[in-house]
Image (cartoon, rainbow, N blue to C red; front, top):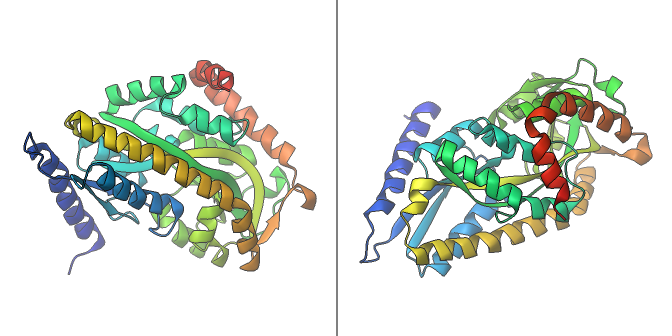
Length: 336
């Protein structure tokens, strides 16, 4: 019987073999097999978009390219997935910009709290052809041997907890799970809580056992993963609007002929728009579904002091990241 660790090692071995198989193709147009590992539920939009990519790529390449998708952390935890793309153990994955920053620090700028004016601004900034993304992508390729294929809207992150929270003072001493990256740890601390780094695969257990009393994620994540079973309240802090970044191993990419690259790029833009629009359009309805499931939603009309939360977060962000990311902030602000 395979243990979880042995299974993951076995799955990674299979994935690595599949990844390597793409280098065997040549002028005879042999089929290309790629693997895509991610941490999300296969029924979430973030998970589904990987399947959509596989379908679009197969269509655009006449079936020449087959992408096999491994959801739910089958091929590793959040950080391991990024590292596996970098080394070529797997071909594709998606991740937060904050998580990618552990491999290339500059990428963390994209997940800075309260950075984007609105949805359109975010989408324009994370377009792979924007000046900011072109610069970040060049650095990612040079430093990690992977490139951004596309980035899609992941949602606006809200706070959930096992109690009502209306001011930063209400979070004093409360342990809130944060993505293990500097930007996210700073955001949670700025909200007033004690940040605890926990991998996503361990979050449901951490919430259920009281290791942490809350977490922060977009509304769709809270709904799909039924966080209402272990969290009684959602606070609409809206502290980070974020994109999920889909990356591909650079050696893998450079091994493709031009027609395959064009087919993948076309698929990437189709999926980017489809996933982003679906997540955006579903946000209001997902909030209602959380209410129906018994979660109490607290917003400004209910006494949530959003201004106080924002002030606390921005103070820490300025102290810790202005020197590092200041030039990027100016470039991002200039994008329409």
